[in-house]
Image (tube, rainbow, N blue to C red):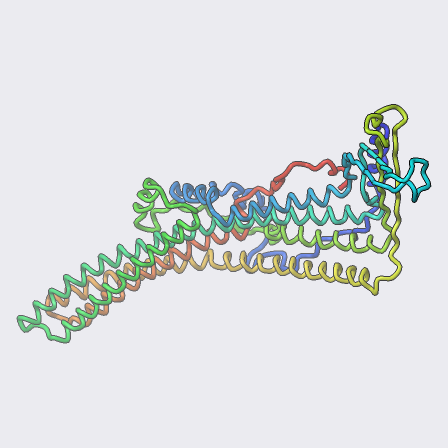
Length: 488
């Protein structure tokens, strides 16, 4: 029995070393320029530029706490993890077909026969035929001479890796989304504080205009204009209050759990975007092929590899299939003698199947596999092009947002001086209230514009870091090595 197992296993491993019909894989050329628009390539180390550990880029303590909590509790990331586990199990299923399945069996067969039909000398009474057997065997094991099973195993493994890389891509997206959600909350909180201050000023101005109208120095038109400005600020107060609460809801959804008291208190202390620890600058002159490190691009390439493997499996279908069914054990018509010497029994039943006519089914399957590969090539190229555009957009915003913010801050300073002068002249009775109202509205709009521009500038830095593939170390090896790695 041991010799039978050893011979069967040795034969299976020898046959597993057969060829495969998977076409040679060549990575498609990236359909993008060698450098980013408006930049020249340099020898910047991609590892340094990418800040592989996200904590080296997101330095704010509150933001780090939120991101770490999201990576532990976010449901989308949990779903992606379970999808990876399912893909891993599917690979094990496909890989297991490379080896024979050994089953232990035990059975009994008892038949009641008429002795007269079989011309037996036992009279006309019934005759019982008994058969007992114990053993083990292999059922319909396919010898993978042409690599059909190994091609399917290759494809399953590549899809598993693609799913694992997809999880990493989602991880980067969640990190960036949490950062963006926190920035939005802080921006709305800052806008709310500015609006409250404007509201207080407009209430004071409204009272002042009413007083001037009562003593005859002003008009009811001035009062109506002051009231209009006051109601406008009250409206904006509710808008920013709502938007701040919605930003908190979005943040808690991404984090995956309600914020604890300490984290919420620390976040409440963020009264302006200037209070967030600044992000380090991404070096200039990065080569465009750096985006090849992005997990979504690597995932698309693994899916392309799987489609290439499917062609090998489709080709192997044209060749004969050899299956073996074998058993070894003991058999007897008396259960008491089942394990006595001389009761051994075995059988081997090889079978070969050669496709002769299938109405073009196998040819269509091969054409389908080739078409799917072309589809995945186009999808891979589209992924690269999209990544290139995302990085190019972020690079274009890096300088322009900074200059726009400087201009916006200067506008706030100029509008503030204009408002102070207009208010002083109104109080002195030199100008009508309309000039003060215009200056006040200009200042308020400039302040909100500065908040929006700073939010865009910081968010663009987050986007640039994400689109360059920063935040992961390209060490996706999330499972044990199967026993057939040396064959794959």
